[in-house]
Length: 150
Image 1 (cartoon, rainbow, N blue to C red):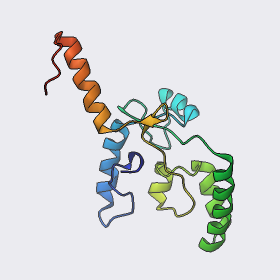
Image 2 (cartoon, one colour; image 1 turned 90 degrees about the horizontal axis):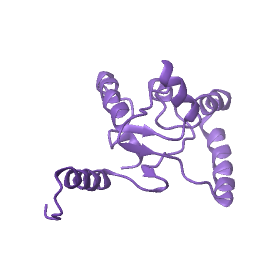
Image 3 (spheres, rainbow, N blue to C red; image 1 turned 120 degrees about the vertical axis):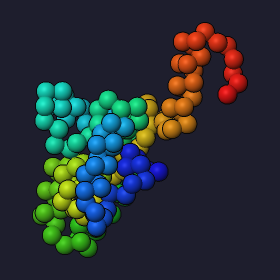
Image 4 (cartoon, rainbow, N blue to C red; image 1 turned 30 degrees about the vertical axis):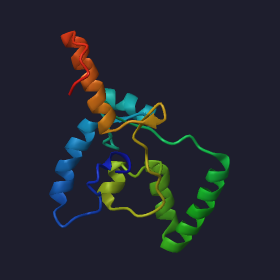
């Protein structure tokens, strides 16, 4: 599983309704940490990217490495050249910030250069395993039990 798309695959399937319905669950699951301006806007209404802001699965971007950024920029330039329509792809890239999970790109079935957000908390692994362990810890704390048995 890479990022919050939960293995659902956001490729446009023959049943587009399924993707629209699954987005509801995606938004409930995700706690997007890398779009602070959109997070603030969503508190008062508009949420064009349809990210989730209050879910348990925290999602961040990687800490950039200068050498890696250079390689990625070079690869992106080549990709724009290969896919054609560079102006349209550039508009997509700027509007959605190359965000694989931005609903505007999903709805348009857009192609192009994207980054994959990471399911991490403070840049350390955060997935279902960590969710289960945290829930178990909270349960033991609430019940007052010191037992470690499952």
